[in-house]
Image 1 (cartoon, rainbow, N blue to C red):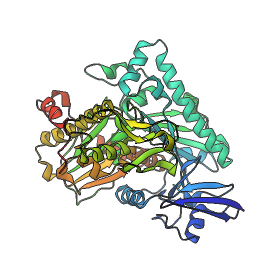
Image 2 (image 1 turned 180 degrees about the horizontal axis):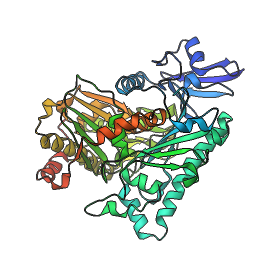
Image 3 (image 1 turned 90 degrees about the horizontal axis):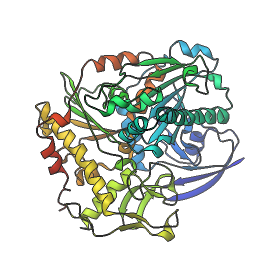
Amino acid sequence: MHSLKIHSAGKISVTDVPHGSMLLEVLRDRGYDVYSPCGGKGTCGKCKVYVKGDGYITSCLYPVKSAVEIVLPEPREATILASQYRYSRQMDPDPGMSAGLSRHPVGVAVDVGTTTLVFHFVSLPTGSVIETHTALNPQAKFGADVISRINYCISNPGGLSVLQASLINTINLQLTRFCRKSDRPAGDIVKICFCGNTTMLHILLGVNPASLAFVPFTPAFTGEKILKASELDLECNPEGELKVLPSLSAYVGADIVAGIASLAPDTAHRNSLFVDLGTNGEIALLTPDRIWCCSTAAGPAFEGANIDHGMGALEGAIKDYFEPGNFQTIGDSLPMGICGSGLVDLVASLLKTSVIRNDGYMEGNFIIVPAEKSGTSEDIHLTPKDVREIQLAKSAIASGIRILVKHAGLSMNEVDALYLAGGFGNYVRTESASEIGLLPYELAGKVIPVGNTSGTGALLSVKSIFFDKIVNELLNNMNFVELSDHEDFVLEFAMNMEFPYMR
């Protein structure tokens, strides 16, 4: 028997469970309602719970083999998971020839984010998600955004090799951790699909990204790349297939192309926006005739960087903020800092109480959590400089949305839905995002969180070779709009710097 500690709805319970019991069955038997649209067959990957020390796992495929402490999703998180499943494309497993390299073949979908890496480990015969794990992108110490990392490659002899090696090392750590934990040989990992922005994919393959920093921003490659695992020295089957999904341009990468392709067609939405909130804010407007795309330099504020006590969406990060002293952290742990969704909640709350004026002025630091209640033994606070970072980031996103809709000859009222993507989009409260002016007020009630679509796209590419055809067809219909060339962008950006008046 093993001890199972369960955090649910602010309460903690402890129970003993037999060795090897599947976690989802244990939770159901004890009356916990865990969202599982496939009925616990392991095919949808939506019955995720947070396991301390392991991150998010698929509970129907997780045997309890030792003492475990878990955090169940809040009702809002469960709703987001349901929305992701409803709007994500479903495909039967057909992984291709590489599955024949092992009797128990495993695929890995990797979302190479600027701040965070997401790994989905998949059983190739069934298409079921065995485990999802996250890790910080180790390149963050060389710069928070893609431009700083490109500059590092340009300014430092061997800089590209350093960045590539740090990334490969982190990927290998995750691969070996999975094999060790699941008692599998590395040879079982036979297919890995990578998705990410154009800069991250250049660095992953050791391709100089310098041209991405200068006009006319020409990537060294945008097309799909297929290699053998041995070419990147990854800890997996050396004959395994490595696939890098295709990009559109320097700043509309594979994360956006595959992310849009991962959405199931919906005839109810004639015109829809796709917004991926991250270090770069990528936006696409999907119309019946074509797809218009743009990218805005939002900066890394929404991923916790350049914020005094900001952090990624990791255990201990404040992810929801309601009022002083009332907040929730990832993993139900002591607060260590605040991530993007918590920042949006916090700014919305301080605007309502006039601690922050609509022009962004705030007098002195605001204490979010005093030292005696934090996990760092020091105050967690918001500074006036942090507020300015949020202003710049939200103005970039809001301006990009409005310019793109105008460029397509539409009004905001003609947009039927806004798909909110990205890890940040998983948790941000859409009402808070509208209150600070990040998302258009005209689209209130039309926002659909679809989570990490980049990871979903990589996952579909691992599962089925037919997803590649969908991606290529989509690429042929995509058009890039350069915002800096648009005559209204500077004025739009200036106008969106202010926060809306709170009434």
